[in-house]
Length: 209
Image 1 (cartoon, rainbow, N blue to C red):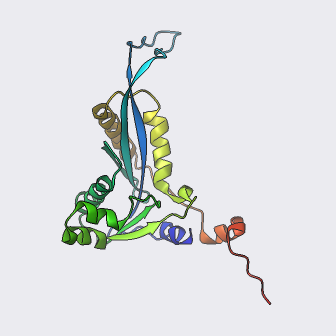
Image 2 (cartoon, rainbow, N blue to C red; image 1 turned 120 degrees about the horizontal axis):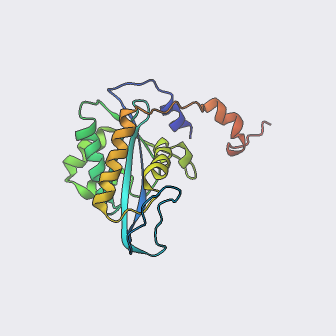
Image 3 (cartoon, rainbow, N blue to C red; image 1 turned 30 degrees about the vertical axis):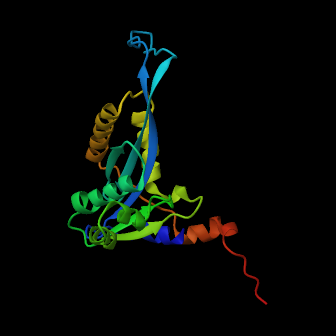
């Protein structure tokens, strides 16, 4: 916890961007009957029946100090999917960085080993060396700012029926562009000193003899 809090209180440095990563799934649901459109005095109405079209995975890559987020929609959430997102982070989204300071949870796929499963050893090592790896503790997902941004995405974009992955990508891209244009940042205030007081029960108890 203190390791992640230390990261969040570093000053902005474009050479070493602080990037948070998290992921979630979205069930794809199609309509059995066309919904009734919105009318004066009557809300849009959907039939209670629907068709399940599987699920899609969404990776959220969020730089809180710059107010930039990127959402990658994938069919699955495997080691290879994670590895491909990391390569995009390194080569496409932050190509000029000296080091990318990455905060993420302890999901089994979120490891340097995933890169070795997806790429040749030399390529995997190149990507691993560009990342400064930081993990939130168990039951500490509240420390991942990307999870907060996923919550906003869920409320503003995903809280309705979306029938297929292509529609999902289009809708998410529109949300992403709008929010990035507004440069919505995060001003993290919770410090290590705060944690040692408010979360004192989580620290080991030392008895002085």
